[in-house]
Length: 200
Ligand code: ZN
Image (cartoon, rainbow, N blue to C red; front, side):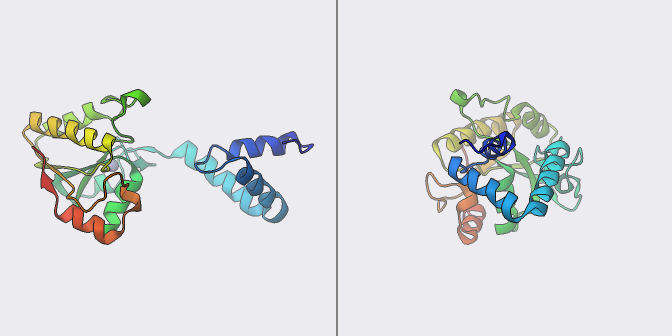
């Protein structure tokens, strides 16, 4: 759109990097900040810059962390024999909130999808294999989403576990096929987690 302000046009364009934000929404957001909430806009720009600059990934579980090892991985009171594998930090948060899981996590930061360039390397599976080889993990819980790609990922995880002599399990049914963990209600997720089944 032409506004007479190249900066404004740039801002609207930049806002479109957010999921679900098209041209109209981006324009509304930009106008809102300039018309009504410049201090909120300043705060947002500062937080965004800091987050992008400082938040990296935990070297152990790959979740978002400002420290080399995240607080959860560093927590010695959690059970190191249970390793729950999730696709994203959002799924990890959903499981933390919905279940009483007290083990550790490994975050794939994606799911197996060769066409999108997501293979074993991108999912950090070499680091995972190394972790399983350390001998502490007794059960791998594949908590990938019940989508076609999530199932393929779980299958690959089961192979890794088998190679390392680690038991593998998968969330029970109740998680709807094609669903995403982050959108499932707590009760269903807790039930599916509690009723996980062996992956052969
Ligand atoms: Zn961690």
